[in-house]
Image (tube, rainbow, N blue to C red; front, side, top):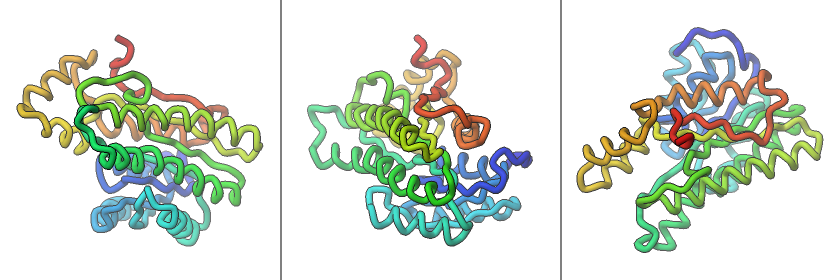
Length: 261
């Protein structure tokens, strides 16, 4: 973990999908900057291990099993955060899934699974997170979308693109609603490019020749490499902090120039 400077000191954050990848890096970054963090993930043991890493580094963290597609599970997670830390200031809707199936081969069941995790989960996070934030005078919601929520990507990404595009516009609409309600809740989205995460490796490994697929993706990267989880964690930290007090409804792209081509 990095040295503490207190950019989110005294704040309480709930991060979904925080047992690994982008979520884990984000939770560690927020904790290093002074936030108490609830590690919310469907993988209970991995979530507890991630919380333990933060505690061992001197931060405050607890774990909670969360199925982001469940209304009841979300309510329980928010209650846990408030009981453990007294309030909720930050929600990072990071949990996500990818399928990789081409649209003409994609079943309705697989389509709905991607939508349930990537879009329904964000909706529920906004809904229940905002209710807690109202009790605390406001807060920041950061939704992890993707460059695939801004541009189309071929070769088996139709469901993923549709779900992340939904996150993009849900973010904008929610930001405007809360601004009109004057409840001091900001909503923004972060759009990673290809990041070195277990999810990306999982998708790459679905190809017949994973090494060739990885090389092909890398060749499309203007900076010549995949991004790292810390790149997203730093972006989330800014949007979650008071430094972004006048920032809502925006899309922060962290893609190494991928969509600038």
